[in-house]
Structures are given as structure tokens and as C-alpha cells.
Image (cartoon, rainbow over all chains, first blue to last red; front, side, top):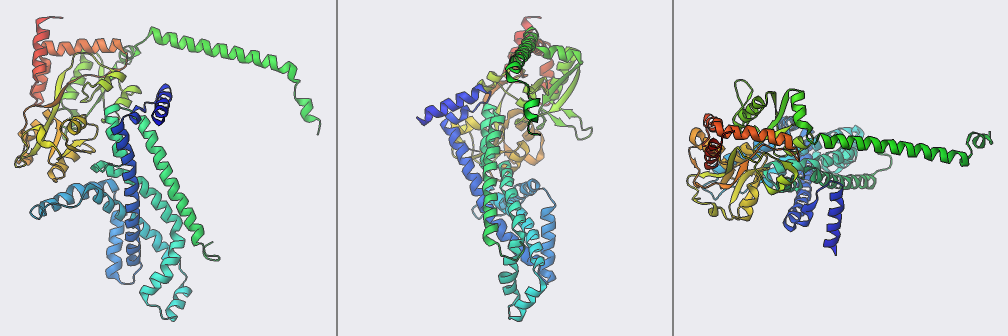
Length: 247
Length: 296
């Protein structure tokens, strides 16, 4: 039933000059669906670690101690100002090769292309999150901080319980913006043979030369993903809204 | 104010026939234009060859993925290599100038289909799927297959030793399918050949598979690759390399076919391969003998 339906759909699209016949080949369909799953996995895992990196970097950046703030500033500037693809190639083809050589006797290198992609994209986007959060941290009124200080809050407690919760609300639109960009950025993982949806498509159009058809599918898929991220961001914004603060 | 709409609107009964007559005339004119366009199309089924001579220039898409096929000369920044020599000579034989446009495996078919190039000399072997959407002069200019490069101590001695092992290829390579389906290898496709070879050096795969002439040249001439070897002498899916043109452009196809046959007959092709550090395949030697025996 569903096979007949798929065949009809493929035939109808074929009349429009679009060749979607790969959908009818079980192995190619499976690899495309698996690619979509890998893209979602990569996005979720990377988004989580980018937030961890962002919070850590923001805390370091806004620290009064130069020993913490300086290295964080240097890291943020270098990461923000170089192309992600170059960073990925540097990490995977250079660092990974050196690591493999060093670990050759110890049973090999445990880092896969997937893990390298997570590390590079999470750190890259973490730097952007850090700057967004820093803007939020600096927007917390001095009086609020002094009030917290007079109540006996330590610096860490002030950061965690006062500054970051308020900073998050300020930075949320910028963070959602970064997240949308992060989802799209996962496509660069295909360059180092991570089997995401872009990679699966390349492998299919290599055989069939149906680049346009797959590009349309990739666009629709990422459109849907980023739409979801956007909705989640909006939901969080209304959910976290504090009357009289920032709105 | 309130009676303005009724006053300005013409009575519908007189309006409609006039309107439909106009539409009919417009439709008829469109059909005429369309028919004329189609007729012109049929009369000049192949305008490409005319256009090449009209603008006195042949536009060829070439792949510059590395020697011996094509690369940029570091000194002059001009493209050099086997593909480039073929494209230049093709234009010379047709008596026109050459313009070369670098293409990638992922965009070459679009470049040809959208008319950005007149022909492709782009490491693109004949496959059933490609023959359905494009045309080519039937005589190939080479027969090219894949070779396997691996560390000397990897223990790989034949194609079947690759079962279950990670093998690097470049994205767009037609070796991915036979490696996975016939030999059960775990194929990892990188953005291009340089990335795939770097990944091999980084131990991300046991072997890399690319076009044989490129790898032979690498192992023979490059000291960086002295720990690596090509342990298998038979090539993977040796397939005819041809010049690709748009589907059904028979005039262009026939003109190119004459040139290719001439390349074989005169021995120019064999010389060009030697000049680029390539070893002509048995297929090319056979074609040379065949065309030499039957003069044009």
C-alpha cells in the first residue's frame, strides 16, 4: 500500500522532471533516513556541549581575575575569527594524526570523526554563546549585585544564582540565534565523513547525479529543524519572562 | 459617492465576449510562438557546435584534483595536466580557442546541463546512470580504474582483504559502491582526494582508493609516501573515460569522436600520457593499433 503510494509519488515528481527514484531503493532510503538521524544526534549533542562551554567561558570572561579572563578572551577571539571548516580540518587531519601517532602503542586513538565534529562545533558556538551571555551578565544592574553581596552571597553564588539567571533572559534571543546557526553548521561534519544527511545525500547523488532533488530535501529538512529550534526558543522566552525585567 | 462603482463598471454582458476573444487571440499567439520555438529547436537539434564556431571558443569543464590529470602549476598558476592537454588539443583540432572551467564531482553534471560548459573532461567514467542523462563520443580516450594505497605493514594484499576495514575515498568517487557492495569495506568519503589521503596518513582508514594513475605517480615520485605501497596490481572497475556532452547533441558528439579517433591514430594520446607521467592502459594501446590499421 505505502510502496504503491511511494511509487505513484515518485512517478508524479518524475513527470515534473525531478528524479526521486532513490526513495524506492531500500539501501539508499535507509542511508538517507539514517543520515537525518545522525544530523539530529549531532545537533542535540553539540548544542548541549556548546552551552556548557558557553557558560564556562562567560564565567571566565566576566571574572575579575586576569588569569581566568585573559585566556578565555584569547580563546574566544581565535575561535570566533577563524572559519569552522578550517578548524575542523586542523583538528581532525592534524591534531588527530599527531594523537594517533602518540597513541599507537596504547591501542589506538578513541576519537572518531563524530566526536571531533562535536568538539570543534561546540567550542566554536560556545565562544558565541559566551559573548551573548557576557552581554547579559554585564546588563545586570549594579544595585542588584550589591543587594546580593549585602545578603552575604559569595562571588560564585552571585554568578550562579543572580547574574546567570538574569543574563540568560537577556541573552536568550541571541542564544536561539546561535542555536539555529549551530544546527546548520553540523553540515560541515560531512567533510570528514560523518554520515549526516548531507553526507548521505552526497553518496546518493554520486551514483544518480540527482543533486537538485536532494538539495531540495536537505533544505526542507533543515528548514523544519531550525523551525523547531525557533519555536523552542520562543516557548522558553515566554516561559522565563519576568514581569518588569527586560520586557 | 455610493453610485460610483456601478457607473464605472461596464455592463458584464458586453464585456465578456470581447475579453474572451482577446484571450483566445493571446493564447493562439502564444501557441504560435511556442510552435515556432519548437520548430527552430528541431531544425537545430544541436546548436552547441554552431555556437562553438560562432563565438570561436570551446568551453570545457575540467577537474583539477591533482596530477597527472589536472592541477595548477605553482609557478604560473595555470592549469596543467592530462585533462588540460586533452581540452587544449580538442579546441585546436576544432580550430577554436579554449576556455577551461574548473569543476567538482558534485557540480560537473549541472555545469554541463545548464550550458555553462560545452563538454566535460572531468575524470568521469561511463556508467549506466550517466549514459541515461548525457551523451558521449563512443571512443574512450583512456580506461581508468581505482588503485589501493596502504601502509607497507598493513598486511593488505588483495581487494578482498578490505572486508570490514575502513577505506578512504573522495566524495563523488564511483569506487564507493563496489568497495562496499563487492568487497564489504567500510567506506569513508572525504571532501576531496587531499583530505582522504591525509586521513589515511592519520590512520583513520587502513587504505585509500583513488584513480590509479594518480596514486602510482604519488608512490613513485613523492618521498613523503615512501612508507606506503600499492600492493594490488589489478585495478578496481576499470571503465572507459570519455568526453561528456549534453544528451542528444549528435553533431558535437560526432565532431569530438573524429578528434578522439585521431588522437588514437596519430599516437598523440600515448605521447601525451607519457609526458604527464602516465602509463597508457592496454585499452589505449589496442585502440592505437585499431585506428592505425584503418586510416581516416
